[in-house]
Length: 239
Length: 342
Ligand SMILES: Nc1ncnc2c1ncn2[C@@H]1O[C@H](COP(=O)(O)OP(=O)(O)O)[C@@H](O)[C@H]1O
Image 1 (cartoon, helix red, strand yellow):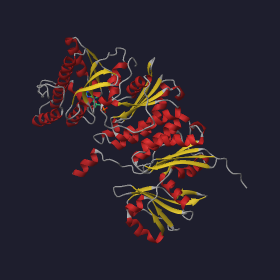
Image 2 (cartoon, chains in turn green, yellow):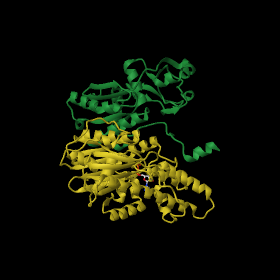
Image 3 (spheres, chains in turn purple, blue):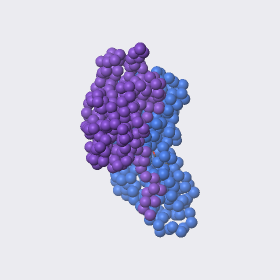
Image 4 (cartoon, chains in turn yellow, red):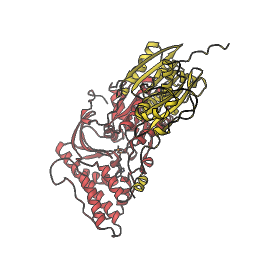
């Protein structure tokens, strides 16, 4: 029997979607704040951090690590999370665990549905695309099976095995995915979102594997790289 | 007090530390100009992406240059607006949370107040009250400054900002983007009197500007004289002369109207040599004084934000933990400092 690993104190935050949320793990307890507030992340996030620290009677520099939803998601939201976590990490000299917001959403769905061990998580990426990834439960943690992607809905793929739960706004935005993949889906639940408290178990794993990074490497993962067209591309289109 | 300044409102990431006793300790600037050039203008999303990559490394670099540890900072100032929302949020998020984690006060600075106060960092510092000419890529304003935080807009551009007009005309002449400085260099070789450009809005009272007509005039002049040798440098010279004379004329009017003795010039176009020379000549003629920030502090930078923040923080002002940016924000709405401070 291995000993129970000593608990790690992690503060996690997520502003990648419409929820603004913060969670703090202390000695197996979890403290969190979450609010559905699409345009108030900038106002809410630091007071939420302050509130969970106060409730735990801890200062930032007594923690082991920070974590954040690194994306994909709203570009501005990703940068708020990254900016805040970088500032906190610099000031308190803490390592940072960047966590996929798709994986965090899958982890949250599993927390509420213990039979959901195979999950496709998808966000609406607008302009006819979807951000997605496939996750399977391994040792209580939702782990990515292959790379996360941004693609046309028709290019979202599920592995042949397992009964899949389809979660996230992407499945509401593109109902054709559900029709195409019906045979492999157990259930489709678009009304799910990533939360900071579900970042904690994923961040804990990253921290213990010594894969946490320094403040300046705590960067968003956008998935979508092409966001504008160069002069050359525009003139080529016109001719 | 050591104040860290952070600027991310547009396409330059700027960081600096200003010490309230000894002055500027160190500053660094990362310009995204090359990144945006192939797009023909600033792409806001790309600007934001670059800021979040560059800001933390720049903070480390500036602390090293200043021989300071983070724990020796006494306050953090960041640009809250005006500017590009996404770009501003990088600075507000990182700046505010860094202050929070260090347990020191934070303050959001008005970008144009930063520009306006920048000449006060120089040894030869202007005394209040003064008239300020703010000329950048996004702004053209004549401002009356009674004291820190007490500003009144005397006049502004009704269309293009003067830097924008430089850049558009430069691009017309094939000088790339942003080509204001390149146009100024080309103008030095040209004949400013080969063509006569209009002096917009100088033939009527008032302190407003209009620059969009100049770029149209440049376009027509180029079209009608395509084959003339040296046409581009002559257009550049005539355009620059028209802009400079218009700006100088309005500055003189503003000084006469207010009765103030001092003019300060700030913002990217304040780096224009011809403008500086003409303003100095006019000041000598009229017995007034003109002040500029050093060339390096004309365009966007962290030093001016650190300085403006330092004045406000030392007067006891500070902001709460709200990270919100203010993409549109009038300087007339700023708070004044308590008397005898700063
Ligand atoms: N020597 C110069 N002559 C004229 N314009 C210049 C010169 N140097 C820089 N500029 C112009 O200044 C502007 C940039 O100034 P800056 O204060 O950084 O503006 P903003 O804050 O609006 O980006 C650009 O429009 C640029 O072309």
